[in-house]
Image: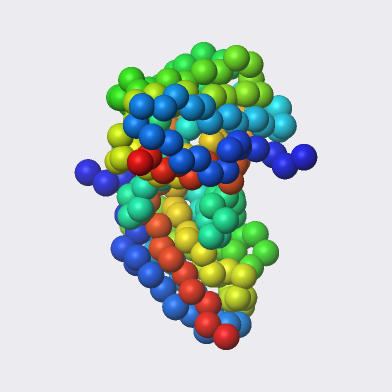
Length: 115
Length: 116
């Protein structure tokens, strides 16, 4: 099993659809993240969950709704998106403790296109 | 103000040559970490190398080394003996904060093309 798995890899949706992105990590980490990657922009942090509690939300529009049911799974629920939301959505995990360098382990991403 | 700056949008290097990818950062924290990631066309971000702010020696991992100049706030990635498979986007990132509140900030990336 790969460390961080994201599904689906590609998603095309209309502005009125509701869909979800799924992320699963098999590394035993205690923090999970959603990042948005748009062309020619730095990665934008959307949400951080540490020990299943959301610790950061960087003013993301409410049409994005995260869910972290346990330390291994993270979802991003999508509804009434806009064309500018088209991007690569990357999930990552890390182990947050003093003894660790804390590097992020990323999934392969979900390429979202909003029509 | 941008906290991670990568000034080279694109770079070319001849196969088997060395290449340096630039990264400067800005932080007021005393404790921080610096990372380099590689992103091939498949999309996955692959961790390459880490440098802690208190590390006195430059980090090395195989063909990757990090030229850490703390006073200049730079953390350049050096890839030695470039291979065709090194063609990818490369991102510099910084981790700030304490273990309970880590924040990761990324640069805009440098696209490296290795020429045969």
